[in-house]
Image (cartoon, rainbow, N blue to C red; front, side):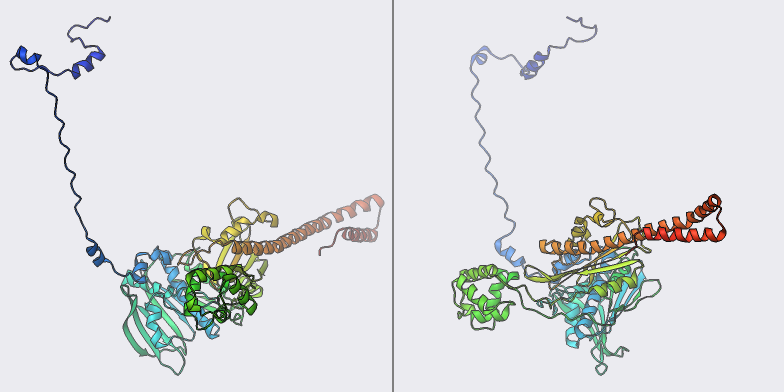
Length: 574
């Protein structure tokens, strides 16, 4: 046992420490009498549990009901403007320009007018810009101007089954609402429908509580244009050059719309003029009726309630495409109803059976005259006009169908020339002739491009990346209803039918590119071999002259004969 050092108290053993701590401390008062010490300690009484407090009632059902009210679509998008593409200042500038340009191109196309657009961006302050888009379209009648620019979800395109740029009736009014939120300024509109009609000038804002336009000014003004529309929006934004910029968008729009003339005034820069590459309008798409394969149960119920037909058979034939008398007979038999039944009298279970029968019956694919693809010749013309390359190619696939909606895929490419050979290929994504600038990784086009092994077509490619080489890829999807992943229309959903058609088009244009690359390499090898002949034959002639003691005339004759022999021995280039 260790000795205790002098001057220190002895510490108790470890177990004794716990015993000491657990023992009650002796009282410092008088000693306890023996009777009290001998008596047993009384048992301690358990404390009664406290009664739980009732939670305070903060709101009654009546008070909550008083606070509830309808939310307008404008209010919703004010708080969720990122859904429309206004989530940062740079993107907001691009989105506002795009929505105005889409409206102008659609209006000119519907009126059969070759579009001439003027796009202006003026910088007013460090983070404030004014955009203006002017067209030579048919104009807008006076009564419709406030609703077009001051009411969300208002338009003529949502219920139309044909290819067009706009779909939802949100775009240009949302751009004006964003300008109103960030600057407090209204949208300015000039419009004229004919040389004989006066030009109308409007200043419009959006009442976000009611989703209704507020007209601040409505007057007639002198305007030099014979017909057309001009829209000005002041907004908070940032302007940058390079990829995913307004400059890039305008250039891609000119490529995808070679029939359009575009004059572009960027802030503080020189004016850019994109002349027409073709002088004829694209073929006008025709409106079609819904195809049964693309109609869901709820939509079928509404269509049967709204139909003008008195009998079910007539409703199916007149309200849908590709439904014949034979199809009607098969469908009503499978559903257990008659063709003479009134559509409004059908019960919900009967409509469910009808819907299942429509999905099971064999139908022709929907008509494809509702589509207006760019076309192979126009794609090549647009690429040649804007991109310096050695080789241009384009492929337009036959129309296909997803969920009853017709669509068509086109792919164009430019290769070689002034394009950088040691960088990743540049990819242009387009839907109904509109460039898609953001959310590339979430888009079906990108997924399809990355799924193709471009090494088999003469290009280098790393896993998960675009091919490397002097290449520009342009991929276009035309459809009556493009399945965008969000309201901002930046990426296309990867339906299996769409991805399949994209891959087939990419592989077809890839085979043509591979043939060109092989031919170019063959030509290069041929030129290299020819340079060897030109380089070494004179030396062979000198050696033969010295060995065989040939004259100059004999030497030249031998060289000519030798060159002809070598040329014949090589395989000619096709």
